Image 1 (cartoon, rainbow, N blue to C red):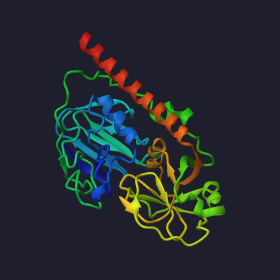
Image 2: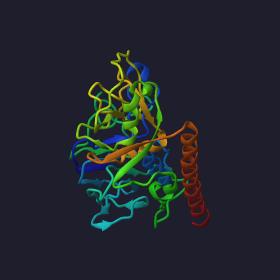
Image 3: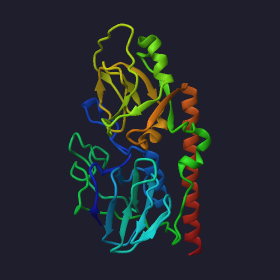
Image 4: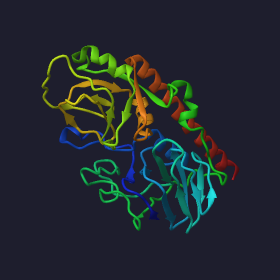
Length: 331
């Protein structure tokens, strides 16, 4: 078990989400940076969907009530265990009474804490993720608060972790050649043209050419973007239709909204583009106030990038398993 010592608003329990229930109005939710959760769980020997703590307001502190292996991934948050600075993206062992501290990251937005076995909160519709607007999942459907205690599920003892830990080159570095480098601080994300793109005529070109700022009216449901508004050539009225994370909608005001992890299940705003899935984790790490520029991509490009990310995850999985097997043979 762990105890939350210090936290801010909106820090929650998340896993890889609960897909399959959008038809009854239930958002998938899940981590804003699912790649960080997958890699952390692989290093610990957990199922990739094991529940983690998503930290987006800092500082954050928790106390271990039992000995436990853990890992911190995501943003560069300079984790410390009872005063000792730790390497991120690496497994560590905590003793009963140790305090883990997560500071404000130097950059990026969200850090993730995973423990061997995963956090044992109730499973609801196949997921332990928190859905804040619905008030369910995770830790009683609400953000974590000081004094909360979270049970830890029993970890798999078959393949032990080395005392020095297992570390990995984080995705941002390992996959650097796949992703567009920020230019003048602007995050470039690839997107595919969506159904109502042609309604915007010349304004559609401005959607792609200008840099948009993530406004303060952004959250896990969606990023509202500030910039020169874009408008359709003629007024348009649409019936509500299904939407998913990554869809970029344009409300009447002309400033786009990117649907994120807690995306609405349906909406009637026109869709101008859809961010490719492999770039969504990078958006999930973008801070309020940062700038985003969309880059047109094809389905073939999106598929090739997805395959490369899959190869990276597979390589991490094979390497972690190889190290643990070697430990089992040697020790």
